[in-house]
Image (cartoon, rainbow, N blue to C red; front, side, top):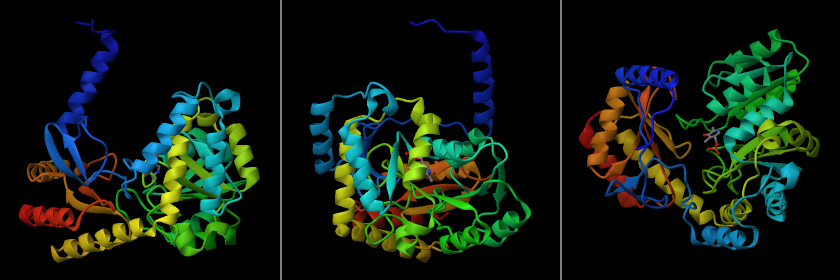
Length: 390
Ligand SMILES: *Cc1c(COP(=O)(O)O)cnc(C)c1O
């Protein structure tokens, strides 16, 4: 048996865990015994997976696996150092060129995760004396990027462009940057991006958008909401992840060459962290090829989105088919956990999302759809929700 270390931190931790438990907010790990996919093995059971952001089913794709395996043979596992030291490879360079073509961008810069991309880009672009205007429901990584940048942060009410404009008018600064998710991760709704672009242009502010849940899902080629709205050329920085629709790990920003070159100099998560393994770069390159070429996959995802949305509306939930994310809001954390457990007993893996991930009183079941779900699996979820009578 290993000895228990340091009593002081242990006391802090025990106190914290008790407080979380009392509020129904303690969380636990649940290890899978399978790859991601519409069916997963968990605790000896096979469950239909509605919790994964693997929207196109590419995490376990044979083509993507083969690309990763081939690169693993050439480059090994670890990358040895940060990219600016000796961790850069031709696989990183190829992926950046491939992503730039996909995003119709002048340049692309890879990061180890979407979290690192948001934190690093914000911290590189703005600093003390500058102002960031941030949607109230932005992802935690954008919020943390604001903190690390030490710029002043003005939070505007969710998707309220008039409030954003008022804030821009009343907050002069040397540099002003507006940041927003394009698909909001816990609600699945879309940012009013046309209007946000207009307001940014009218007031000389830069715009950074987070396409984490839009890449692979929205746009004719799957490049996200900017592509769907024809706004690729009107947004200063577009961030996308390799970890959701692209089925791997890592992220990128698409921007002008000077922005990419400058962020590479300054972003602490890039400069002070070991590079993404080349095998993950090769996997992402194969995944982008599939996303761009195979629109049957996206069509299948959207058929599932429409089927689920129609079914939810028939059950009385006010949802719209806007993305692959569907919140079913139940209120208190304990209710969300009980509903999630009831769905589990019917063979469905659906996660309860609680504060601080979502605001108090809006604990929810979060359903994520995939192109890999069958119609039968979608209908199973709808039948289970009907039986739950939420
Ligand atoms: C998942 C997510 C991220 C973080 O991406 P990772 O690659 O998982 O680190 C950033 N922004 C949003 C909106 C996300 O949903």
